[in-house]
Length: 307
Image 1 (cartoon, rainbow, N blue to C red):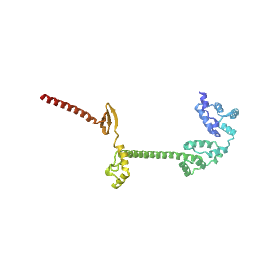
Image 2: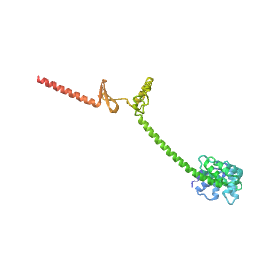
Image 3: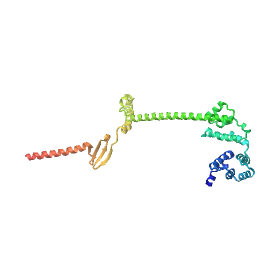
Image 4: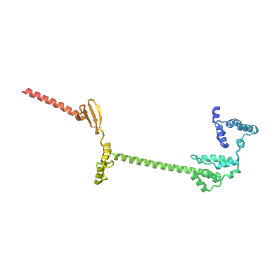
């Protein structure tokens, strides 16, 4: 047994305020985890969780009581801290469920505090007090009110049953929302793809994207007004040159400057700045020129030989 690890895991009473019952519950969980079942040995570790004054109280309990029950220890500690039954009742009445806390988890703590009150004093805790404690959960509250529960135990059972139903309904609603969101995302993606395709179509009357000239929505009168205001020229500069007239990129290749145009057509400018035409045609032209020169030279030589 790692005694230092055990001491670090012990719950300190000062962190629980006046909720002695919860502190005892957590302390016993640690003892069960480390398989410490001997009451006297448990009391030794319990002294490590309290201050000096309470250590003396526990020491007197150990000396005066032959049967070291948990209930006796709770009563003596509460007596020393000045915790009365009225304090426990008001604490239970003011107990509220947390935002992310489930109804079953809340009921465990509620029942624990409820049973820690004397039986005669439990009558002061009503069903309305329990409903106020779980007021943020509307559906369980409505179910408890609808059933007209007569005691706390019955109200707790109805609330837990309603909580399970609420959880199933919420799952179905979340699933339906997921399906609807998936459908909406699919529709949006489909519409975006259509818009992307339409961006490749341009009207050569108004120079707007998304339709062709025969589907243009503008009349000739409107087009003339747009032309006077410079709207058509603006559309032409922004849409036509951006989407349909790719810029030519110069790159250096040996003694020629290469010009990359649309559809892979490559053009050259030599060092003298003379245009050289298409790359494929350039090689053919050079071959034809060389062949013509050779043929002309052969013809000239044959004519001279004849003379």
